[in-house]
Image (tube, protein in one colour):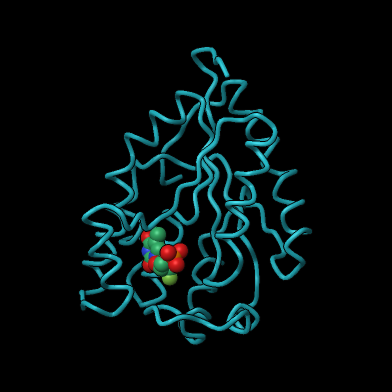
Length: 212
Ligand code: FDM
């Protein structure tokens, strides 16, 4: 669809614990928006297709060991390497549905004991989301859902800490969605929230930067 100079796509981020349903909900959201004729893309972080992403993937699958701050900076670099493409897409009118972003970066690293402010620093200057959807689910319930795989962070004790760190990061602009509901109920809620934000961006809401 044609857009005026100020009209742009929305940057929509989904966050939550492992196994909360983020990935299925993100792709359903994309199908829904496509069905309405929006131009939309599904993105995810880490983006494992880049060379930085491959280092991250190898760390997550326990094939390599990295210092906590080193892996933190790689996750951040993985967002920086996509930043200009992200801006180009948004400005050309494409809405991006992003499965995890800087909040995962800060929540997972600070859950290991790394200082929160230190974790935020390399994220400063990345594009700020227009909307953060937090899929809320107790860690115990997420763990029951088909069980965890073999990845490094998929352990209940650790996910409990991540949940606490997300609590600290949360601000009043986040939309908290009860992810314990059925797939359909959750999707319906997400759809309603997202449409409003896409409209605001089409009307010229300016892009802003993290960390604010
Ligand atoms: N993760 C993800 C981080 O620790 N930092 C980050 O910046 C991001 C984006 O990587 F456990 C963690 C969160 C999760 C793992 O994510 C892989 P996916 O969504 O399962 O691929």
